[in-house]
Image (cartoon, rainbow, N blue to C red; front, side):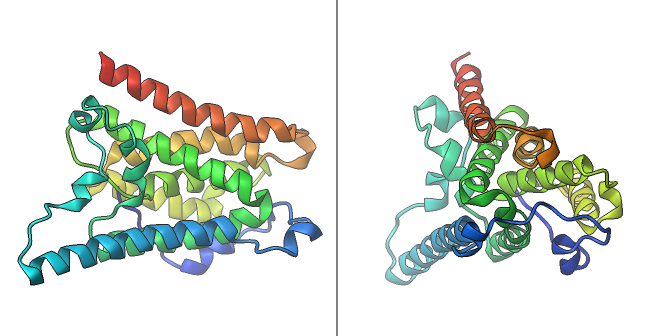
Length: 247
């Protein structure tokens, strides 16, 4: 699963139309506004460095440990062996520096736009549900391809953000955020080797969850619903994956 940066990185953070998500509370501003974003980037980069250094060390020492990346990716044959952790681990493994770099760049941009608005808990739940949606999409569209990458989750956050912009009466395609998402969709369909199911699965779940998590205050969405819905969405993705593999 891959993701690509916007033509102008500033557009992803400062869309070129006069709209603004609800600002964070004073209590939240006293804490780190990017807690989950920074943690996710650290974990993804850390895993990439660990796997890369392990591969280099094995080559230098002449030892054979196999391709450790395959211990994380998702594919139906692995799930059929009961390795269900791959539904999550696939979202934290990347195939090369460009892959991880582009995904983390977009996560960095989107996290600074969204996490201060909805807080770390809701942002983490949105990310997790989108990740599981990406894994389910990859399992449905390309079940026997070894798939990995954070872009299913990143697509989910992008889709949620686009929905949030639209809920505020702004045409997403008139913003840098909407254009970025549209370009990424086109690249997903045009470039071979990118997980279409992973990207679209993450985007669909992200859009559904984002409709509540990023809903304007005037909608009066209960706080418990903004927490419960992403949990249900993620659990449903896991349940559907179990059902698919079990058939």
